[in-house]
Image 1 (cartoon, helix red, strand yellow):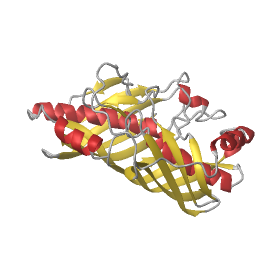
Image 2 (cartoon, rainbow, N blue to C red):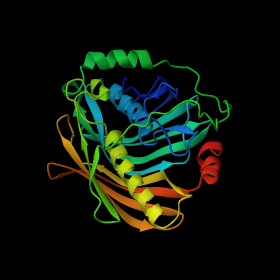
Image 3 (tube, one colour):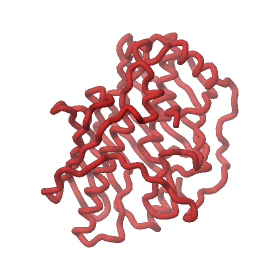
Length: 310
């Protein structure tokens, strides 16, 4: 599977903003189920569509000499979950840009309503030629940019509630839990292998693990920790649903051959929500960190808020 998360760029104001389209299909490798019968796209992975649109704004403005790499995100907000058949509008804007970096914002809209928001993301501008052949990037952009192409309509097909006859493959985001000796903390490993398809696009000349994959490893382990906490408290009818993240930081490039040590610890916990502090180290060095916010909800409440209320 290609790791190309924007299907079309419809509008571009040079160096400032862009709007595009991302279509969601049953062929997507990143589908998962929080509740059976309601397949949704991984909440962090879909944020890569915003990151890639923002990247194209900067790459085109800098005449294909740099490639933005996000290092810090102040806040990530998830207001709804995305299903096969949805057509998304992706929006990105550049607040400021220098020779070395940029401050950007973006969001994903479904039927005109924001479902994913990324606020105050800081990008480091890396030499494009060290990551991706510039001529390849120019060709990709030529195919993507279709000025005047209609954006998604606000009136789309309604959300689907049941599709139980189609099994959903859930991708494991960490490989093994190595320490569960403390009830409010888990530690796991994730091995990074060169066989992953996304390295073909991220990037051909320097394979770097996408930040959204690093976040998914943190999210997956944090969710497992919350499920255990709920079971201990006898709250078996509630499930954790990621609704936001704060203080997201990426400090190192993670590459094939690295082993990630992922940690998740309870920051606060109540009947309706919880915060989990997560971090990733590689070779003893701090590679990434984030504070994840979960709603603790039952199926009916989840359906109303994240599926029907999108």
